[in-house]
Amino acid sequence: MSEPHLTRDELLSENRRLRDALARERAAGESSGAAAGKGSSEASPSAEEDLPRASETLFQRLFRASPVALTLSDFEEKRFIDVNPAMCRLTGYERGELRGRSFAEMDLWEDPGEHEEVRARLDAEDALHDREMRLRTKTGETRELLASFQRLRVRGTEALLSVLADISARKQAERSLREARQETKRAHEQAQDLAQFRSSVITNVTHEVRTPLTVILGFTSILREGVDGSHRRFVDLIERSGQRLLMTLDSILDLAQLESGTLDVDAYPQNVLDVADNVANTTRPFAEEKGLTFETHLPNEALYAEVDAELLARALGHLLDNAVVLIASLLVGGLVGGIPLLGPALTLLAYL
Image (cartoon, rainbow, N blue to C red):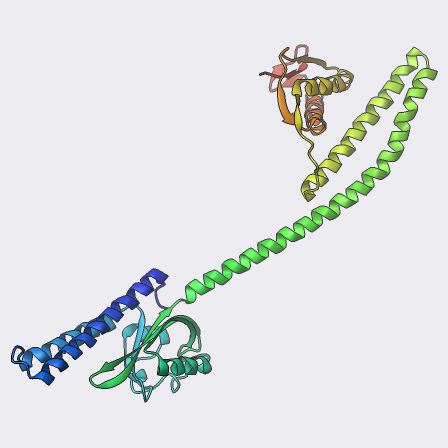
């Protein structure tokens, strides 16, 4: 069974509580020793014994109740003097299986060399705090720990207190988050590469279509001069259709550039009503061909905004084209939303 997940603050708080208890025990031991050496008459023998006994009782209570795995071992022989219940839950071993044995004998460390490094440092230092290590349980499972070690004397014996906090859940969450971020980054890069490739293909295709279309539109002015009035409407139709196709190609190219992040926006302050009026005049013939009455109602006051006129015109043009097509298709049944159409009209409105 894994240990309950504790936050770093909770782990540090637990460590501080144990250190305070050890400090009180040391202070009590030194105080009682000094009193005994001087032969002071102010403290009775029973009082001298009560101070370390009280500290030891407090330590034992903290040792047993701690939610963090604790071991107390002989510093020289490296064998466990005692382990707390949390250590048993962490490793899967019973208390009797661990007492009198060492970390090495129980093969608890996944990297024995790392533990030897810790022991070497503790030969020169009294304590080592917040070191990440890996422990192997009875079932062979690996648990990740935040380990702290403190040297102390217990009943005249040099001992080592090991504080082993299970941080496996936290480390797994960190790895999962790191992997998710890397996967998101890879997906984003792949999407960008795909968008740029698609933009390149669309740019090439639109260029191939635009070139002959431009030639066709160039000849319409010549054709208009060479035909009579009855046939000129066909030339006008060719020109309007060509212009619409050209605008569609431009919009497809804009969309591809927008997806790939290569679209250049040239925005500057201008009267957006002029843009709307120009788009309306371009759309009106198309609406009339569909049998619709097209009206514009624009205010006389100018309406300035910082926009890209060309991109705004394309967006409005597509909105109006879609509206014309939709209304014209609904006219087949003679109804729009269940209301008979009387003089159907498409109106472009702009308000301040």
